[in-house]
Length: 117
Length: 116
Image 1: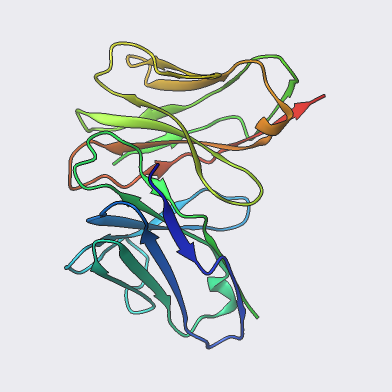
Image 2: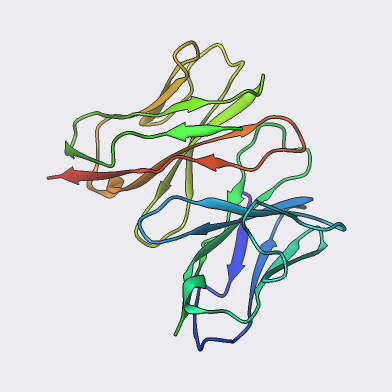
């Protein structure tokens, strides 16, 4: 089946550090990847839509200069949290959509727990 | 805009019993997909079942079935013969079937606890 790999699974770092999270589709090409954020005991909220070869589309209230998204190939999207602060601590999870997938579900990575001290 | 409502923050069910998790939705899209995902404490999102807005029959996947009532805008998940391993958060979600707007909108989730 389709597999999405997300790395790292957990990050603990000091305030002010920039953190890069990778999302890879291992056995399919994904023209579109989605980045979600989930605060404790809450639901997943879409942050941005990442399209291969073009700029990401950010949801209202998500700072594009703080959450840098790069989708340089059909199998890799990265999310960089720049100058992270404690309020950025959250669970970040990506999903990828197969090219020409029709109505097939998106495939999720296993998520990244980010803790900023 | 799309909206998903899950009114049950938590549910308890006895092992081997069936349980229904409620989900209602609102959308202006003429065609859409409805999904259920399971999220265990480890965090990964496990796809359970999908229902398309134009599908005539209710979707079924093993012990999971989706009770789709389009006129009522509801898409309830039924889990039959509950198992202890079913204890988790369950999210109802939807997306437009328009190519350019396929991101998922999630409900607030229902925490299911299966009791022995």
